[in-house]
Image 1 (cartoon, rainbow, N blue to C red):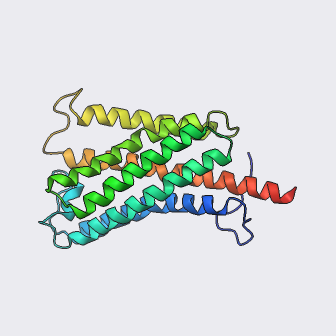
Image 2: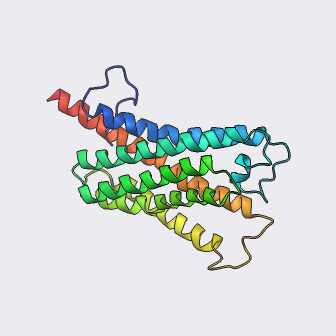
Length: 224
């Protein structure tokens, strides 16, 4: 197995630096979103995880809705940066430019939707712009395509395939297309959280793997 250098090594080479910074943002954005949700929950006494949606944390009934909404806006901006990082990483690794463009588009739409929804808070109908974030469900397939001819990315491709399958299963269940009644008013909040963790969490893992690969290639280039 190839030994990759530490992610923030002082001797980090200049090659691919901008791409790696964008991927660092891709790693940080899901973590920031998770922390923002935890703080928003702590600031909302009586919040019911089973029955309430995450958007309630930024709604009129929340004591400090700006915590959640600010977190969503920053995470949206982070998603857009991460999308460009993914796209540029795919191109740098010799992958499909068309796939790279589609990846950037998926994340750009998701970021715009998150930023809009942070301004038009729940239950404003315009808050539904956050559904643009569901476009990230397509991004793993595009990333698999983009990395299909890149050596050393087999495990990442399998991970992305698993993520896509998990999101597909969660989609058909939460949309009541199968197992009707499994998702109901008593547990809908938990299903939403499971979906959110998968939907957002995979981006941090993929960003970290790609950043490590670019760092490795940069060190190899400097050694030549």
